[in-house]
Image (tube, helix red, strand yellow):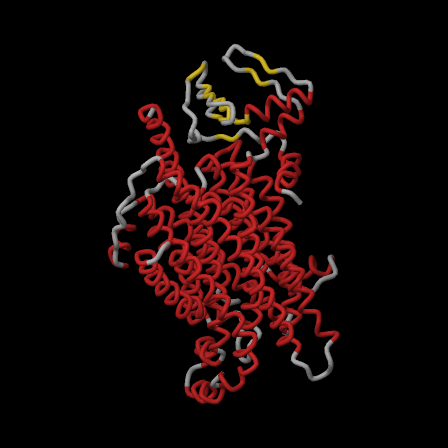
Length: 586
């Protein structure tokens, strides 16, 4: 399907949402002229911007597209009391939503990159849980320990390496240097490491240690026992933090403006969530292949080969798309900057300690980091309890993987719908309201899930009425909680977070984004994991800790709300300063 046709289809679904509330006027090569109530008109090929300061709304459409559309649909283009009248018919409204060619050239490859990244992340996320939770003498209780003692140190170490790479390499080469090792590892795991796991895993040594240590040390020992699975778990987590959060959004922020971001960031995930649907069904299909295999064949090993093969293939498409962007978009932007004789900023090298000090000195960055940390802690607190129920219901790796495939597809469908709603939320209610949706969703659904576990006895008649066991009811309710939380995260939380980076200077974007996305997210998950570890040792089990986890979740959501409100005020102030600077620059 051609890009234009794709956006026309989206336009039909999104008709009527072309006006979006914002305090930021788009920048462009055209000069801006004040007409009537702050109506800005550039040359014919530039957008026509009608901005009403009383309503704080801004809408745009291409003058050429508008003229063509009104002639096709019988509309009239004339003057109004405010200086500009645009009576647009149905096709005119569609034309005002479809991005112009120069924006499509950026948006289509970015959407394809995001598709590939999330296609891989869905497969890796489902696979890492299957490996670690269903491993010998392991379970969901191991997740808090692996996030704290393996994932967090790996994230901190990568941040230091990334800072060195950005200081000593071109940014385009940093992307290749980060992505290619991931793909090599995942291929090696399926072809070399997993087939030799019996030889590589020290079961005898760990059994000897387990005989001499208290039973509460079972989870940490499971990490040592299944160390290669733990490494895979960390690499899969890092793919989301490094490739999706850091590399992709870093590239997107470099080649898009705030105006483009507000219009299209919520839509980037549309293609990506189609990837969730496809990857989820692919995981289910591969997991169900065991029925056609000969007796004695390791069904999960065969499934793993197909899963990692898809990851490597998708990674190849990702690299080719990135090369296209570098050759056809970034190079042209750099050439334009050279023609304008823009002064090049001198790159100041900062140590990891200096970077941390720099970030802590900024309240804007601290609030942004608190959003990421709060999300990580909240989702981890709820998710681990759900996965403990999930293993009880599906102890077999392939059955577990097949359920997770359906779970991922359902997440993609719900997120797709939320993406469509997200544009409307940004348009009608602004950044602040969009940023508060995710903590609201996680707080309400998370507390509801914990309530079903705390009052499980009262839920038995309900489960019987719907033809389920209490265990399966808890699994389904937990799945619904995760689907709603992740869909609001992908459709609103991520775009809000990435928009917040755009007003920052380049140093804050590069160093701040690396620290927040690569360290902040694991730090949040590790914080939630540490809480669970303390409770497990204190009360004896994850199930017994459920009431305490519910209270802690409520407190974290409250802190999240305060940080989001504070950041919203700072973000709007930064946008207002940019608006005030435009007349002075002219």
